[in-house]
Image (cartoon, rainbow, N blue to C red):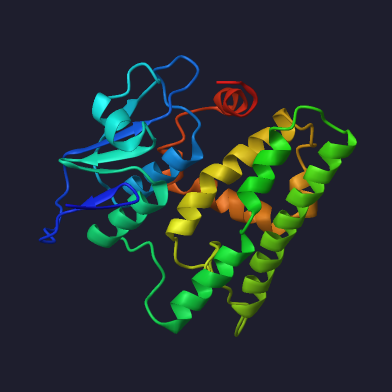
Length: 257
C-alpha cells in the first residue's frame, strides 16, 4: 500500500465499494454524543450527500482504538473503510467524491471549473483562522479583541464581495440569476459548501452566544453571507447531521478540553 496524508490506497488500484465504513469523531461534553467538530461535520455532510451508510463512533482520548493512535496519531475525524483509513477531512472528502461519484461535488473539469473553484477558495482564504482567533479570545471589547474582530470582518467582507459579484455576473435576461452556493454561478453544491457550512454554523452561534453580537448584526453588515448561510443550513445533508445544538457549540469553542 501507498500512504498519502493518512490516505491509503491499494497499489493495484482496486475500486472501493460502498459499505464497511466507520467514522470516528470528537464527542460532545458527555463523551458519548456527537461533538461540534466542523471537520467531522464536513465529512458527514459529504457522506449524506452521497447517501453512503456508515457507523458513527464518538471517541474520547481514553477509548480511541489502539490502531488509530499507533498508526495515525489518534487524529480525528478518521474514516475507516474496511481495511483502509483516512484521517484528513479534505482527503476523506476528495476520496468519497472521486470513488462515489453521484452526486458529483466537484466543479466540472476544464478551465472554467478550475477558475471558479480558485476564485471561491481565494474568497474564503484565512476565514476560519480569523474566526477561531476572534471567538477563542476570552476578553470581549478590549483592544486585542477589536483587532481580531477587524481581521474577521475583513474576511467576511471578502466572502460578501465574492457572493455579491457572483450574483451580478450570473444575472441575465429577465432577472435570471445563479444559485445560492459559492462556486461559479452558484448552482452546483460542492465540497467547499460542505466544508463551510459547519464553520459558518459555529460562527452564527458564537457571534451572539460568545461574542455578544446582536442577532441581526450579521444580516445588516453581510446580507449575501447571511443568505448563503441560510441556504447551507436548509440543505438536507446539513439538517440530518447537525445533531449537536448551540450549547455543544459554545462548550466546544469556550472550554479547555
